[in-house]
Length: 325
Image (cartoon, rainbow, N blue to C red; front, side, top):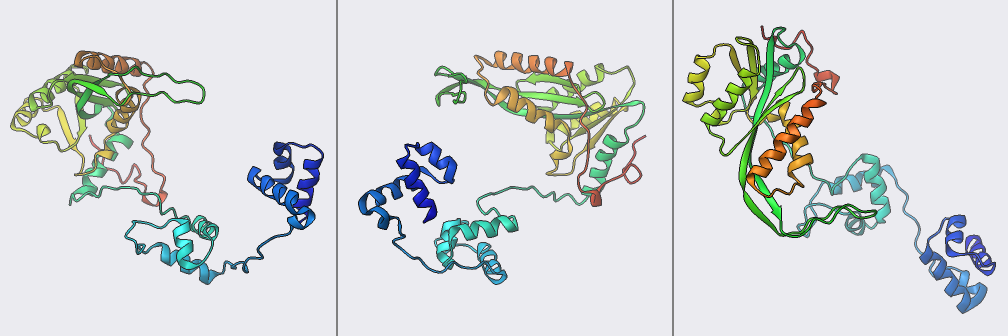
C-alpha cells in the first residue's frame, strides 16, 4: 500500500514513468494498473482486490518432490518439463520450480550429446597419443593429420547485408553450390603451424600425396610421428606399401570414435568458424584459394596447443604416459 501511494504521489508531482520505475523498482504495466485503479476509485482503488492464498513454504520435502518429478517424463509425451508446466502439475508457482532447479543446477531445457568409444584398446591408444603431446621425442616431428571432406563452395544469390549497430550480418536463404572439395591439414604440435592441401577427392592416392608434402617439409630422414583417425583411406594397401618404403614415418591411430584426441580437430573448428561457415565462394577454385590464404596468415601467428586436464584425479603425468623414442 505504501509503494502504491508513493507511486500516485510521484505521478501527481509530474514524474515520468522512467523516474517512477527507477525509484520504486517497478515496471511500466504496474504503474499503469494502479494509476487507472486510483483514477477509478481514488484511495479505495489502491487496496488489493484479491487476497490470494497462503504462500507455499519451500521445504526440503517439497524440493525433493520437485526434483524427483523433474526427472520423469510429462504425461503429454513432451520430452522435458518447463517451470510452468511442472508448477501446474504440483500446485506450486513456476518461480518456486525455477528456484529449486537453480539451487540443484538442473536445466531440463538443455541437451548435450556425447560419443562413447567402443575400442577395447582405448587406454593404450589414448596414452600413446597423449604421451606424444606431453613428452614428445626430442629429435622427431609430430603431426596431427586429418581431412575435412565435402566442403561446399556456396555462392549467395542475394546480397549479403553487412553488420550494423543493433543488427547482425545477414545472409539470404537462397544459394548456388559450385561444387565441393576436401582439405587435408597437418598440424605441427611443436610450432602450431599447419600444412594444408585442398583436393577434389580424399582417396588413398591423395592421402599419400599429402604425406609426401609433410615429409618434404622436414629434414631428410627425420623421424615423423603422425596422429590420425581410422579412416579406411589411411589403412589401405597402398598406404601400407608407402609406409614400408618410409620406415621413419610412424602412424598413431586414435581410438574409435575419439577424434577429439587429435589436436588438428581444434584447428578445423577454427577454419570452419572463420572461413567456411559464413564464406561466399564464386567457384571451387575461389574456395581453395581462400582456404590456403587463411592457412598462410594463420601460420604467421601460430602457437602450439597446450594439452591440459582439469580433472586432477584423472590426470596423466609424464611418468604414466607412454613415451615414444
